Image (cartoon, rainbow, N blue to C red; front, top):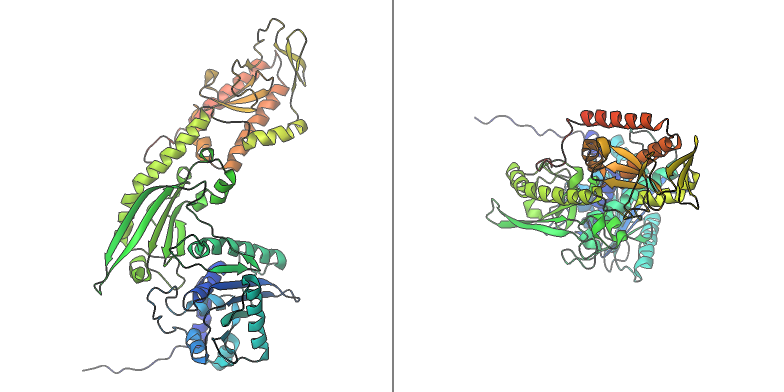
Length: 552
């Protein structure tokens, strides 16, 4: 016997307000709107304008020269759960993105559009305050009024000025009653709105350059070319794999995954893995810098229909690790494989099938080892002394040394070398050319112009020591064979800022010691260095060893 049924309508206000908390970031929301311009809108050019008006209130508008929409098209576009796209490979998915992405930050969403050959534009708007007052899904939906028509004309005129040709059709999305955009991380209203807006613009710029890289790059044939402008500036593609550039990655793996869908169709996902060169392996450092080799950029870049939807991250296949900063993996699939990759409303935060995760882990494990090996090979070369005076540390020391409190070196006409420090004149080399033993005197001149030098080992196993180079430069020597150097310094050696900070620390300590060294204090300073070096060796004993092959 069938049970009784009842149609229970949801609370309109609570539902539409609930859609405001889907977790969009500002940059992700704008990218979702651009999806609609590129996908169903078929736009060739998109213009995004964000800023503050005269009342210091935020402005957000996105215009495109796509096919435009009439009243029926606008109604469908503004419906929560719009009709499924006829093109199965559309960037759009659930028919929710435009609305949820916008109302995450504003309480009134206005869309004004003019299809080709239409006499007048049309407009539709969701006003959350109206919905809350009426408790009904009240959509404003009519021929555009004068204000809305002017907004569209102005937006398309500006877009045409960027492109150089008039837009015969197009659409503008306008956020009004923006109440959630300029917030701090803890949710409070930003006190300095201009700075907060500039920060949002910078974040958005980099996000769009990465997400729509294939569309922005005219040389990339995997997606049709689209021009995107942000506050009048044309965005240039940022390619994580630096293909075609002087810092291009070495493609170490290419593999296809074939999936049999329930409908019987087969679809393919493509994986390509790249190991980017180290800094010392490229000639054009500007190209290398643009590649942004860093902990934050390593990992899997997941592309759906040519658009980045997730990453970089390792998607559960392993952890981020300093020595694989050069490893980047491209994984591309089409929209029909959304169930396999667990694509959600925001087209981010994917939930990939566990079987595929296991396959990816098996493939990427040896690649992580190889990236680790190449990275450590570079660090080993550096540790053995493979460095030049062009290193950032040396450049900074050369510029600032004159402002530091450090001893100086004078050389007499008889060949004697004297260190002048706080204790007075300390002889380093006698007139007979023999060292006094106060500090080391190097007989090598390969690194004679360097201030910070790496040695394979140092006397008594100390972590650092001082020496006088053949160029009469007082150097600090670092013991590349010391456990602290191997376990604490090398893991951050690829981080230029951190490496410089460590080298500056040792340089400052060494120079302070030299500035107080004489025949009476020399032994005391040597004992201190020995004790510190021994204690550091014991303290880092349980830290992971960089030479372990499976530590990636």
